[in-house]
Length: 421
Image 1 (tube, rainbow, N blue to C red):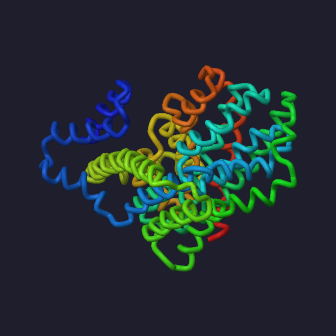
Image 2 (image 1 turned 135 degrees about the vertical axis):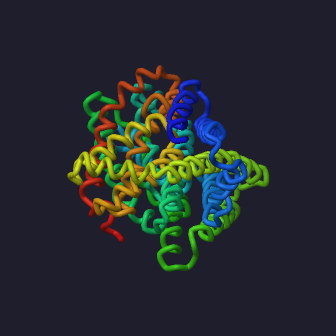
Image 3 (image 1 turned 60 degrees about the vertical axis):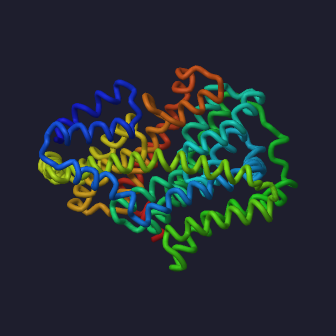
């Protein structure tokens, strides 16, 4: 069955079949062609992951993010980011970076951040003299910072699959996220200085800082609320996600006073659509995981890697390269679900912490979000900028360098992911 999977799935991807459907068709087709496993058991394995109570955290965190991004909430976050870095050289590009970190604490989704920040900032950057390709590249790459900020949906998925503490993963993602933020802020300043991009003096007047901070504080405190609630054992991740929805409803209605029934309805519908897509990927990937486990593929692959490479540093490097390659073809949730059982076996043998592996995996795979041929945030940002794809890709190498450098530090120096635990 594994051989059939290896043949059917790439063919479907080449035919531009959506990843979730390609996974489902490949798994179902392999089972039916092989004929060794009863269809009833296959159906049970397909739906079993949807019955896990912790899975409820995914739709509720998505809904909380949608509610908090409605109305003036999102605009206040952007204004706060402008007040922080707007006066610096390349300030509007740095607003994209800082905004991604702040937005990540609300949405936990790189795609949501790329869309929200891109629509708000890229047109302004173009009017201020930023090249369209550069503006799109900054937005596409910096939006992936959000996948490391609580409540990160990819980290939740990894935690559920690997049975690793979601709280530990949330905390472990903080230092790498801050490293990415400061590295990209410095890179934006350097590139803007070399290109002579003018200062946007009106974008960050100092007198506006306290006012914008006060207005955006409810959103800025969102990740703090999530981590503190989990850290002190007040609630489980699923319960915290429900509390986050309640928090978003109260803040939107009481503080910002622009959360209407229409916007709530739209947020619920959008959350349902996104959740449906994610859950379809989880279901299909779970079936493939079961097939691979049934045929001992993760164990045999781990034994082969250990026998071939021997040295832990070489094994970690090979894992990084493989994750980078797979991340360019598969959506982040699907790649996490497929790779976690395999790399979990290898990590256990070489003494790599599952928490460190989770952060390393999310970092690697997030680079694929702005890398062709899939490149979700890449295509979103390029479309918003009204730019040619080739021009955006030409601006990305410095951002790849920064992201890979942070990923390697996290991979080889456990302190960067485990220091706060």
